[in-house]
Length: 173
Image (cartoon, rainbow, N blue to C red; front, side, top):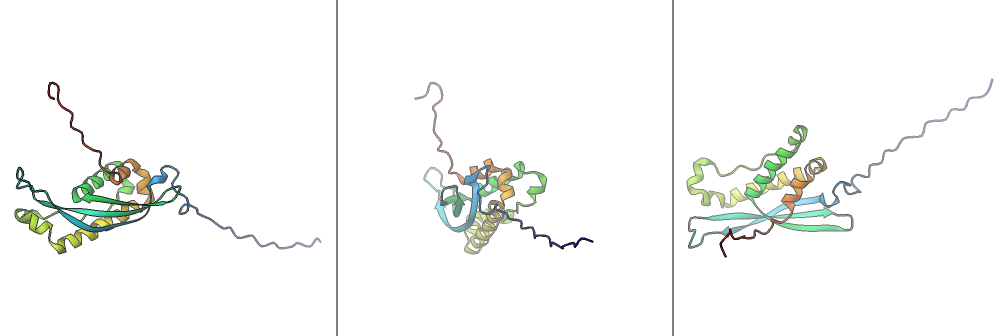
C-alpha cells in the first residue's frame, strides 16, 4: 500500500488595499480627516439693511489624500450650507445609504425666534452646534460609500462657491 503523506492546507491571507489606494472613481474626494473648528461671527448689518443681523461662519479643516500628495483644505461654511449639503445628499443617495447621514444639530427653536441673534450666538449654543456639525461631517465625509454614491454633491460642498457675476438686462448698461 502506498504511503499517503498529509499536507496541511496553506492559510489564505486576504489583503485589502482599499485604505492605501485612492478611490478609482474620484481620487480627489478621498477624505482622510475632517474637523469643524471655531466660528467667526460676521456682522452683516449695513445702513441699507440694519435688520440683517449677525451669523456664524464655521471653519472646516480637511485632509485629502490625492494621488500625488496629501492636501489640506480649509473651508468656511454657514449652517445653511450644511443644511443644503444634507438635503442634497439625501436626495442623491439610495435608501440604504441615507441611514448613514446623521441629522444636523437643530436650528434655533421657534419659541426663541424673537431673540434669534442672542440665542444663535450664545457660547454654549455654538459649542453644541460645533460638536454636532463635526459629528455630521465625520460620519458623511469619512464614509467612502456615501462619498462614492454622491461625488458631485460632496464636491459641490467642498469647492468654494462660484463667483456671482452681474449681467445687465437688455437695454441696461
